[in-house]
Image (cartoon, rainbow, N blue to C red):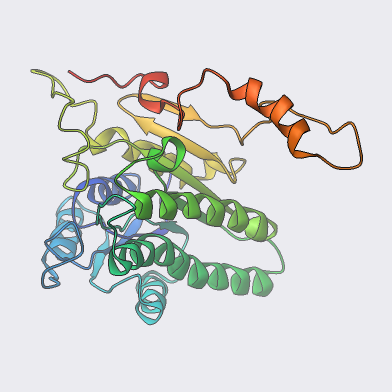
Length: 312
């Protein structure tokens, strides 16, 4: 019996460590040939000398397990290098079928203290990095579709975060980038559906070097797999990359510890109509002030409690 991704090729960015590594290994386990991309900088803030080590180690691990893999150590936030990454997949494996965007950095700071560079760097790696690879993958699939005279196989899995859903006080750059990734995903899903390509986004909870501070208060179990292990997230990525997920497009899925929550698009909470041609200040005061009375200023969606993650 063939594997779900047998004969397909995939790119996973940021795959040298943590979540990306688990995803690359899972795609390979399901039969895909994988291009393992990682710029290899040691600092989670995107600092330090780039290294080929992390990407090459994961590619070697896949090959040792009987799979096919090559390493790519370029910076996906650089448009040219992102194009070279897609070109490498096509050159090595004949085509690109799956793109998993995972690469990212953190430069946390409260919004009143954040520097321009801290803002720009995080937006560049997360949001621009997602766009760059998507742009070249999309062009590849469009050309294949035109040559074939019909739809082709293509899957995009992007990585957002609940920082976008729930807010994160010390991460305005990260939350904004992750929100932008959702917008990029839904736009891409609409644009590429005609070519047979799907695009979805996940909000994973995983204990990695990127999230070690955020999950410091969530204990590890004495036995069994950590609920925050990246291995809980990777199977969903493998599924979304597979033919079985052909009807899933433009969706946002929260995933962690044996749970998946399919998120709805924002719904109208309440609707107010003016009794004249346009609203006046007094009318807005009479309608909106009572509606929001009693709510704490800045009240936001408490995703951790709603979706079942509890501190120890």
